[in-house]
Structures are given as structure tokens and as C-alpha cells.
Length: 178
Image (cartoon, rainbow, N blue to C red; front, top):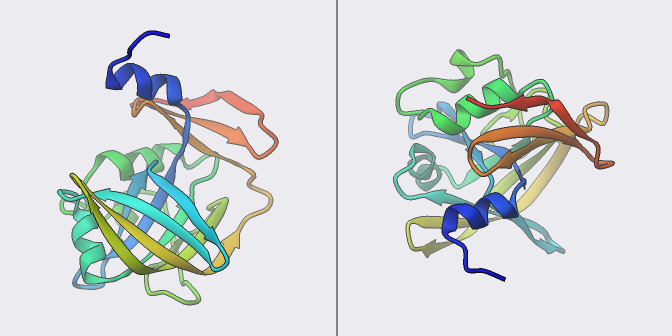
């Protein structure tokens, strides 16, 4: 084995499931951030953690409202999902500037993104500072999904999104790269 720099290691570790976290700002305006740093942390109760950079607008939002909806964007949503990962909610209303449509959540205030493969409504229970990110650990309050939209998106080294179905089929013709 050879020693790798950070970029080589991230590329070789790819792809990572790409998700969108919907938050609310201090005025209750929804914001969407693209993330690949998330994980399940418990089955009973079901819990999820997300890591958000301190400088991100969504970090500010999560400090105001301790809730988020974690949505897995489905095939066909890659362009808007990419926009939500590279543009700041400080500068734009992502629901206005994309084709994403908000759907009312059952247990939390931030909305669900219509057409997501799966969506987890989450309430933050704890947060941990880790260098330049905060890890938000949350209880899953409700889950929603579109069983007919089984292909969701994966991030390859912060450069492109690919679509992979739950059976493992890769859709290379759906590669999206800015």
C-alpha cells in the first residue's frame, strides 16, 4: 500500500450517498444543503447524525431550529440537488430557484422535498463540535418515501453525482457534473 493525500483517498473511497438536509432559518424560511457526511447512529431509537461546516448557512439555521428533514434525492433531481450543494441559502431561496417542491412534514417544521426516494424527519438531541464541523445527532420522528423512485444519488469526490438503485444498478448515463 502507498500513502495517499486527502484528495486521492476521497476519490478512492467514493461514492458516498448524497442527501439533502432541509432546515429553517431564523425567519422560518426553508433552506436546503447537500451533504455526504451523514450516518445512522442507533436502531432503537432510530437516530441519524449529520456533519455541517461551521461557516455554512445551514449551520446557522440548525442553531436556530433544532430540526431537519434528511431527504435522499431521486434520479431526475440531480441538477437541483447539485445546486443545493454548491450554492448558499444566504444568497438564494433554493425552493424558489430549483424545481424542488416542499411538502408538509408530520412531526417537524422543515418541509420534505417532494419526490425524494426517502425522507427522515429529525429532531436534534445532541451536537458535538469536531474541528471545523458540528455533528448533529437526531432522533428520527417519521419516515416517508417514494417506493417507485428507487434510484438515488451518490457523490463522487465532490465532483459529480451518479445514480444507483437499491439493487446496485449504476446509471452512468445520468452522471451529473457541473
